[in-house]
Length: 417
Image (spheres, rainbow, N blue to C red):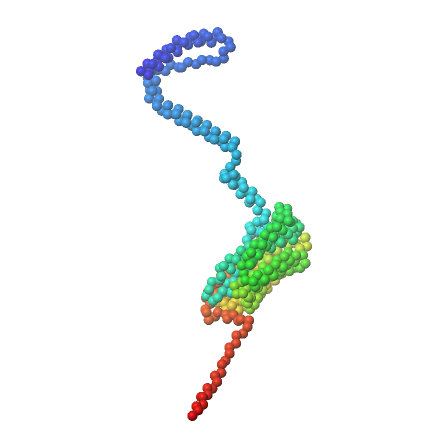
């Protein structure tokens, strides 16, 4: 039926074609040509009828696709015309990027991306706290946490003070010319405000300790401020840095015991000073050429080609002081084994050092973090293995006296007869 009906329709079209052709031939202004449906056999049309359903589904799917695209276009236009959403992920990401860009110079100012300075400042504190622990006991983890936080803050404050003093010098040195103050990313006033915030946080940590430790900790601030000036007047600025960086060897014991045991803390402190001279002299060899041109002094320039001999002497003094501190605290075998490993580590550093290779100097300097960790673990293990009999008796400042009572002879009462 479908094929017969289509054939009738086709015959009508064929009858109209001559008229249409004549009209087209006589009209000169018409540019449109009419195409008639080609003749299709009936058997083909019967076969096409079986595909009618698929054709309808294809048309429906195409219509649905156009509707979805139209809806998306409408939604996009309405969103662009509407007010921006402050809580959108794109807006939050932009704000986060702006915040990171604003804080990056201050993070670089306190060397947050180079934590080796924080480690080197913390280890003398950790040594002292671990040495002050009772026999068979772990070190005070609360104190370790406070001193680690203080090391992070005060190391950053020291870097800020150093960059404020050396702003003009840093701009002339290849390694330091991109620092925030030297490159002009932040102003001197911004650095002063940031330093005030750092010192306030450091004070907040310090007041968590006893009052003896507060006074002892505050007394180190003079060394922190004056150290950057020492490179202008002496070839031994590393000595002043050692006195500053190892103040925690005194402060850690005082924080846990309420006073400083000089028998243990003084050799520990002097050992730390010698250690600082070793690793910071290696560090200073990176900039010795620039220092010569600028006129800045350092132990690297003072020792020159005899650097390895000088560093060997300070290493021997360090090991002697550590042995004396261990003897004063009745330390056990793990402690002295750690001292031996520390000595071997430093000897390897010194005799494989290439003082004319800045990359090698930086690598050797950073490896001193391992020195501090090895000694700390040795102190902890040595203290845990100490027996109660070996526990040192801490003498009080006032001697205790005992009163002896002499019994008096008892006389029998006279009996009156």
